[in-house]
Amino acid sequence: MGVTLCILEIMRESEMSSGLSPVVESVYGKEDLSRDPCFAGGFINFGYWESIDIDAPLGEADRVRSQEDLYRLVLGAVGVEESSRLVEVGCGRGLGCALALVEFGPAQVHGVDAHPEQVRRAQGSRADNSGRLSFRLGSASSLPFPDNSVDCLYSVEAAQHFPSHQEFVAEAARVLVPGGRIAVSTFFAMRAGLGDRLSGLLDSFATGLDVPHSLPSLLDFLAASGFSEISAVPIGVHVWPGYDRWVASTKYADSWPRNYLRAYTEGLLDYFLVTAAAGHPRRADSPGGT
Image (cartoon, rainbow, N blue to C red; front, side, top):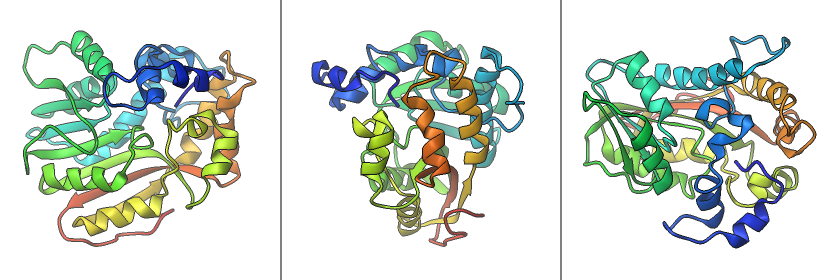
């Protein structure tokens, strides 16, 4: 998600150095979105605000906690055990991987990101002498792991950037062991054909940084790839209002980032936690419920 109104100019000036699109190359490279006040503490997500009083004045500690709590929600849903080998797809600076290691105690955590600079940042700041934490270059459509080698695969607010959810799901099915679990939290267009309306409200869609994927498509891809226990839980009520209250306290109080709440209230997009198990295809629920 971009945070400057000049992002189109950034796209024109950005040079491709890693096979990424110009906007992704710039926003997660030289612009380093994690330094922006919208994403205090180095995390890059909208946050999960259920346990935070958003009617009280919000400080940086609240913002960091909201982002950590989103990771806790996702990691709790993916079923981490002491023997688990975890992979985070789109790990950014690696803070979520470090949280997973410390708070959930799996055997291994591997962070994967498509941006070389993000991988370097993670490797440089998340030192782990136990050898249980690592960071690797890779994409959602080409994960650097052998077949059937991962117990839990998760992605926190990165899947909106993936060019193809179908390729992502196919890779998840390849690397997960039978019965292994996947958990994805991100925002989706509520139906197909909303790209133009979302682009008119939000620069991240206008520039192509975010893709207006629809939730039913992801669920269909999961079922077609042999996943079972497929669940999609809407959590926007605990995401958008809290994020909007936080943005109101930053330099973006009167600018486009507050249109995320507008898009949500107008029924254009919502935030979901999607989970499934590698196995036989079965749809557990439909969009909007468990």
